[in-house]
Length: 395
Image 1 (spheres, rainbow, N blue to C red):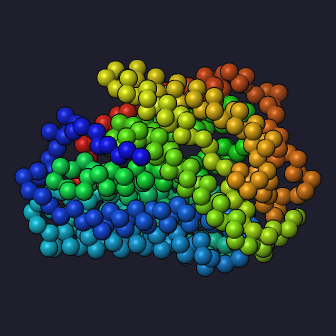
Image 2 (cartoon, one colour; image 1 turned 180 degrees about the vertical axis):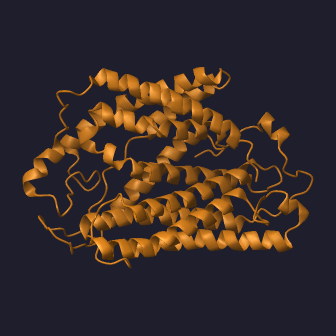
Image 3 (tube, rainbow, N blue to C red; image 1 turned 120 degrees about the vertical axis):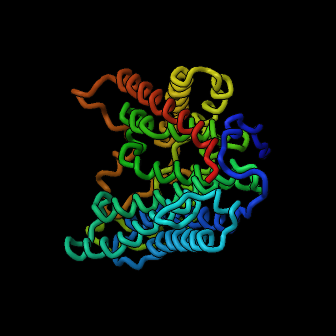
């Protein structure tokens, strides 16, 4: 695949980062935080599958250990970089950092440190919570929210760290940094997708709630990536990475055996139960990349409206028929729609292959779709503004 860097942005001329000398880019730190973010996201997907297949039997599960190890790698590596830059960094290296309590480090490194702190704090908190209130499989609880914010911090820190490197003219490996940044955006989309799981179930894909939910965050990420990305078709590439990470993790997990250890158990589980096949986000992302190339010189609100409508229309055009395909033909290893959690009774299995009917008092579908278009317009407009800011980040 071509990996062409875009021409320099005129906004780069206003950067305050040094360009007279080439400073050390500390590539080891960029690679380590991206590796840590990947471990956090894959560990999270593994942990959800663990809960769906085994139940929570102990804190010391391999999935939990992978998540916490990712947090430690990002936190300790970022802390070590901050100590080096504070006490031994050159003037050129220190000029590309931000100060926090007198210490110097790139902004993304500080975000990783904070994310690591949140994750480490959540570990004993979560263990105490389950010992006090019982072993459950609920997603929303105070320790889980703290852990989620910490994981989001690690991924966001990797995104910001690689973003600064791809934008800086004094860094030699900008092409690699651009790909690392795009990979980080894909991980960011994946973790946001996990937060939206409750509203993006396959059975909801013929309802307005699905399109409204996805329009609350994803257009902003994709439009910002279309502006700030330095690889060809950046939003499309990031969406492809999101799909590969989610689907690839599911395909690998299904190869390994798993047995439920927490009741009630209504069905036999012989291997890990994966998450649903990912949303075909690559199609609206590609459409937004193509549209942005035509509207990038328009006023921001007008361009945001074009991108928002593009997102909703493209998502509807691809996901509506694809969800029908999954209902009819997805009972295989590739799409794995016939994998059920152990606590789901056999009697409810038929409802897994039916779309949720619209409630009698629910708004018409066209009205929900209009609402999704308005949300997507607002979030795309915000994303464009954020993307232009991102192109100037060099610290």
